[in-house]
Image 1 (cartoon, helix red, strand yellow):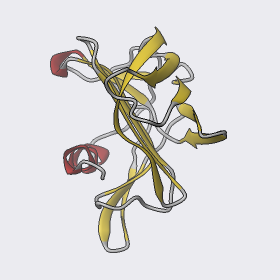
Image 2 (spheres, one colour):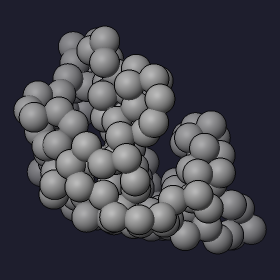
Image 3 (cartoon, helix red, strand yellow):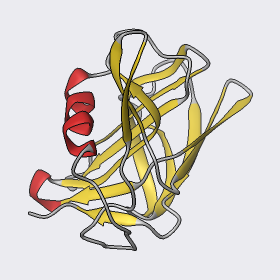
Image 4 (cartoon, helix red, strand yellow):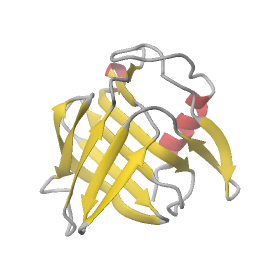
Length: 162
């Protein structure tokens, strides 16, 4: 199940985002599109960021989003890719969300092809945070399914003002 709060935050923020962002920029690189899918509010994300998840012998690729950091919210990385729909069921469009706090906790959600492939899993992140890196389930958050993955902001990191 997707959390409603991030969706609402994205919907509210989507209207205010304009400009071009580079690493550490104070302006988002683009404005996500707000729409309705199946009668539910949705955000179609934009930007150059990508992620890949490898799970169960399959590789899932995600695109269209940008990396954010928010020191005021204690977020070292907030990355949402694909399409976010305010619903309890996964949408048919790919969706990826990785949030890493400044105090070392990171969570991952991913939907693909109308199915949830990772649900609110605790992950460890390594790399050049927030720019790029790898993730894998922690011993507390991986559950029975093992997965690995990568993300890349492609030089664009929006730093939320404080």
